[in-house]
Length: 75
Image (tube, one colour):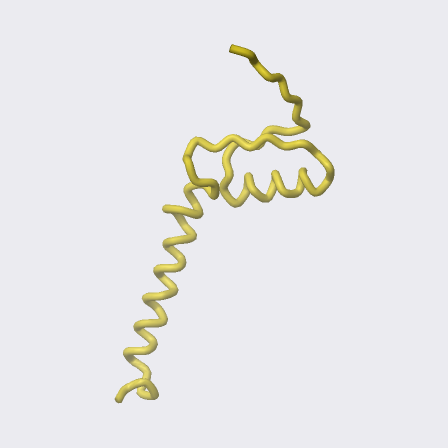
């Protein structure tokens, strides 16, 4: 087995909104970045099962309640 050595300017642990933002800023400033993520999908817990899906669901429910209680939408 051969090992390949690579050099990076920064290592970002986690690909959530904070990690992604940090990695993008470093890359835009010409840095070579390695990102480590334990899950198969990038985006982190916040994106896939945390606060972002919760906010989207809360917003949808709020619009549905508004639709059901607004006399303009009653038929």
